[in-house]
Length: 260
Image (cartoon, rainbow, N blue to C red; front, side, top):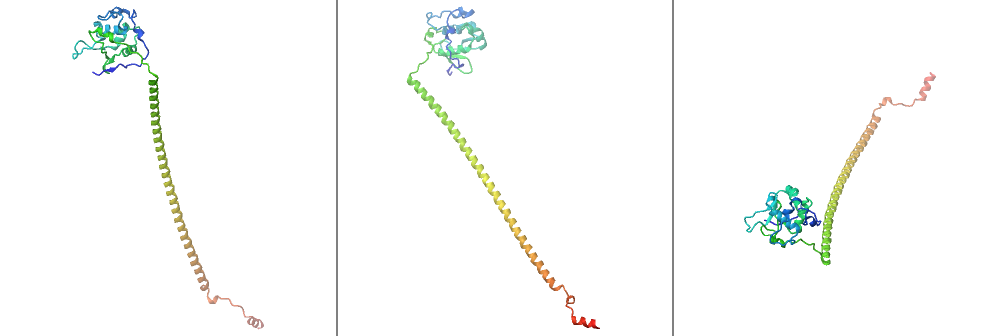
């Protein structure tokens, strides 16, 4: 079975005092303060002592108990919370003043318990075993690790490198965006230039066609005018008969007529 660190909450405050020994347990204080054989009084952390007594208590097996494992000899090596609501409302107040389940999980983390699987609330510790209370003395609370100046410097360097890498990735993404934008604008400008050129060429062709038509019309008009002028000159020469020509009068003849 895979061991998984207990990380169900983000509670980081130190709440070990809420699991201290004393009379805060309520009605079940006598049950949880029962001495554990093989362990001298006061040698165990109160949280570990109360948790072991509760897991061993047959009256709460429907809520929390050892997990039987046929493949392991010498008793169970993990416990499970079977009913989370009952545990919070009825069992957890026997260990703490509050019903804060997050605080309970934080305490499991502090003492090195691990969650056995993601789909169940089963936890284990190498020194937390059924029928072996003398091993509980090996369970120690984790201490906060202090970092040296060099370790702090290395962590800061890693942080800066990570931020630099993120900024570089963002810069690359922005560069790709700019390149794509420029390419799109170039394509748009090229398309517009081709469209304008096509329009201008079409306009020139239309003007050229109109120019040819105008030249043809002028040529036709000049031809018609020439033909009409030729017809007029011909008609002017041949339309008048010789009998219709006017001749000047003979004055001598007129005088003879008057004398007679």
